[in-house]
Length: 82
Image (cartoon, one colour):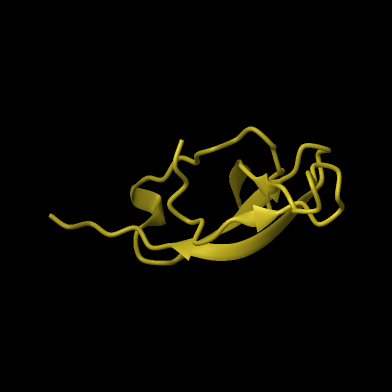
C-alpha cells in the first residue's frame, strides 16, 4: 500500500533491523486524528462533510519491526468541489 503523506524513507534508529551496517528502512505506517488512540495497523480514517472548512489534524506514525514508533503531525483539507 502506498502512503501519500510519506515523502521519504524512515530508518530504524535503534538498530534492531540493521543488516551489514546499514539502517533498515521502515515500511509500516499508521494514521489517526490528533487526540484519537494510536492503532498500529490503522491505515485510513473516515472524513465526511463535517470536516469541510477547517484543517483536520492527523498524526502519521512510522513503525519499526520491534514496535517502536515516531510520528509527525500534518493536516488534511477537505473541500466541497460541487
